[in-house]
Image (cartoon, rainbow, N blue to C red; front, top):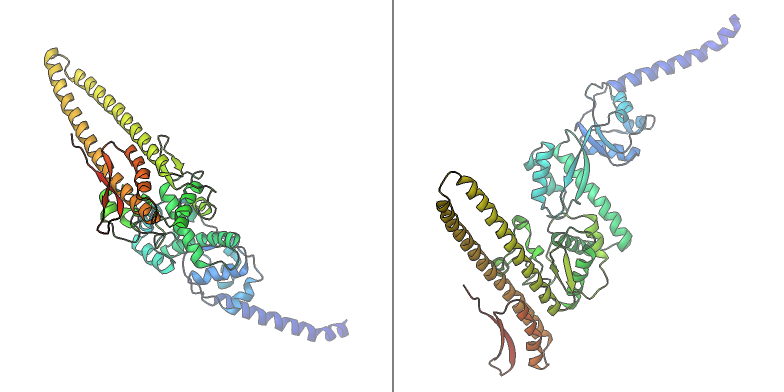
Length: 442
């Protein structure tokens, strides 16, 4: 027995020394201070490389020994993590990281909003600083607008501004990159993708109905192919004008590259956030010959291939608007009558009737005045549309009989009986069309 122990003693001594050395190394490593960064992290995939990259982006200094150690502990899965400040020791930080899941809330990025509007909503929803959000957005964004896909996102409570912006942009571009590879190939053109993002934002500005988006996309692509100006109100809803009604005056005065009533082609940049459905429609338009679309009484759009059909839809929608306004005016008058009758209880009935009739007459006068304004505004817009159409047709009809253009523009009378089309002769003796609209003021 003594002999056996004496033979094993060197082996035990070696193993004990190794264990003691390992214990010393472990203690020294565990006690080495870890430079910590953000309290909240997002790990985009369940891989060691993704975890290390997320930690480094979050401000954590990860060394080669840390890489080695992390291979022997549980790797965190995809998601949000909130660092437990009570965790002590470098080794135990990595060992317990997979357990530090963060509580999340849902935030919504609304389709059609500008970056500034989106950042305002985020600052209010997440209780963070908007100026800091804007700072990091400008650092991370590829373009001024259209960097974050509209939709619902789960975000950790307590997230800092930089991590939030990076998460939203990275997640959006992961989806966009995958989409581009599926539709344009692995080595897709950045220019082609950029144009698709612009078209997607235009589609989103014109409609929120997914079933209409491919039809609107077809109109845009058909006009681009024919070299016709897009003439989209949505193109003028950029920047601070994002949700401002486009008026004839605005169409005339806006000299930006976004005014598709005056300039051919696409605007220079996306206008706003958009959905993945809008992007899908941008690259997969309907197969049609449609060149126009007009809002209808159902709140959707009617699509047509000819300007004559388009004018007919305009006339029909205006008739509906007038009927709707008449009904609304009737409801308002009846409501006012009931209010007057209630307030006149106990008074002389004749006095109440006289007062009510006077108020009613004044109210109807205001309605009439407002309708006159609306008619004038619509006629001005019609003038812009018809003049633009006239210029387009005159260029395309070079060498043809001048009467052809005039005949086609007789369809413009469908807008208003006040529209007249005459022909004049320019200095070279050539005939060309001229549209004259006399606005009758009642």
